[in-house]
Length: 171
Image 1 (tube, rainbow, N blue to C red):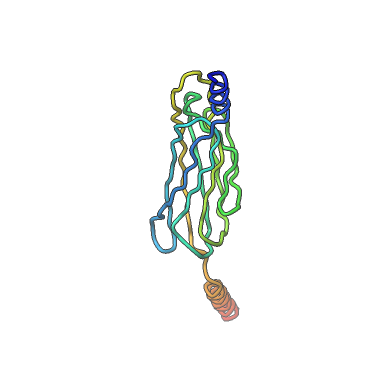
Image 2 (image 1 turned 90 degrees about the vertical axis):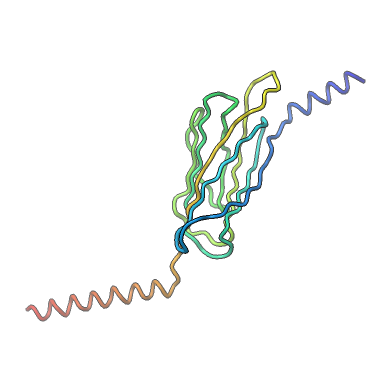
């Protein structure tokens, strides 16, 4: 009986999964440009899938995002596997001590959801908890309405026509 219980505990310990988090994040700023900072500390060894829901609901936005982790010891090291904002993949780079990810400004529609996949992995025979963290930013800019583009093009046309009119009067 003790042997079976020991084997069960050993199997559970090898299949460790870090706690997944779901966080609602409010953006701050003006009506046309907003941003937010976010972060997580994982105290458990294993894989994680963290979800961040951002406050603007429906609409189309230009979105850029960044992630960064800096671990000075294996217990504080996060390794990113993938990250997405509404299905748009962040570019991940770095390894070991410093890892980061970014999304260049991209037009994205809908409620904004960032999902970060990664793991905390360290060889430690004691039951010392991890203290692995990462943080990031998300920036949102309003996409101009089609009418705004039409107004911009009309204004450029008027300026161009005025320039041609002056050129003709000067000759």
